[in-house]
Length: 577
Image (cartoon, rainbow, N blue to C red; front, top):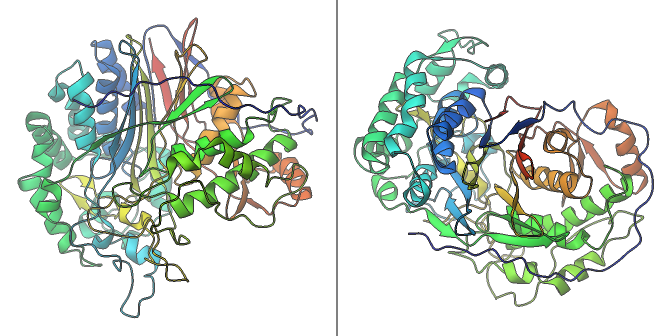
């Protein structure tokens, strides 16, 4: 049984300041939202219609939120293989409405026992090229998503484990139609980066990628699912499947890794304490270390709460304050966030109200900081906190569910970059999550980096499944997004849109993406948002325009029922009754 974590809405120090009252310049505030979906009984939002339909099927059969989430994840393994699957990992939040408890689950991958801090260095001690490291056996960590899902299901599931795999098994045998998004990602991907079996699955004999509408069958994955459905995750972590995973990694012709059957057999998913931050009378909760998501989100909320951001959505003064707070949080994240089993992560100090007040004082409301650096939170233990060298990619998916009992499940699930290590075993892709470690184990001063590679360690993540509780402690929102480190920015944008700017969940998901990191300020490329780029540039920001393809999936619990919103940037849908 997992420990139950009681969510207590605590008072939070609140400073008053003048409202930001400037009007938003002429311009668009976001993409055209997908229709707002309403339901009375239950709802799921997932990244592919077939995955959402599988989840809804379980809800209609009387399943709990976790049952729907498992069914959706199995289908996503098949139909959205570029983003997540049983060869990867996940972070999860589960809200037990009857007991009024929230539990976080860590299904993050672990480094093999044979991994060393020099894993991604060449013979001269220099970092390997990222593509060379990512698309090889070196990058594969022990997958964790199945173990974590089973842990949640054992406590909260209402339908039999085996039943949850049936929609995915049927689809894998009959075949599914390649979606426009999958076809687009394949067109943009070098077939030579795939190991042979994966290459043959995603490309034809002339290396032409599978096109939109192509019926892609995966009987090997159906067989794998049937084995796991009958025998539980042990069928994955021990026996023939585990042997094939280890053999594939150790014999990767691109660069072999050390992952072994012992590594798989000894994997454990971990229940962890959620990280929660009061904001505007609510409690915003997410996954703690080794995820950096909730800590960074909480820092930003704590820094900006004294300011009134509510004048209009995207008013430049509010956006300036938000991105300045994000830049500070990302600087702290880079230095202090890592696997708490290996590094004494100072979460309490990073969220200390006096520390956040000191970080807030660094923000000039009129002008961007030229540089940002990590702060020194109280009670930082002497340990490995060198300047970080981690670079991250994002191949991730989000499933949000609320069931008829008011239980909620937020699942952020990933295989890291698109198609993971681009290695296929028994119909599923293996992750390349170990490249979320710092390639360099020490900084320029010789200080060990918190997020360096170590055997058995979990790489730092940005995944941040989020659940928000209202002023009365009742469930209010379930949300999350893919996006690598930008997950933090996407979730924050959505939180401000919902709480400060009073947008509905569909409007919040569609709102223009923006954010700040220690490396600068980012804004979506569409020319409709040039006005915002200009306003931020005038404040001294170096604004980088780039695609920011979030996949936000949001559910609101309202007095009139459930409302679901799916990000228009991807293929996700909200379904409910």
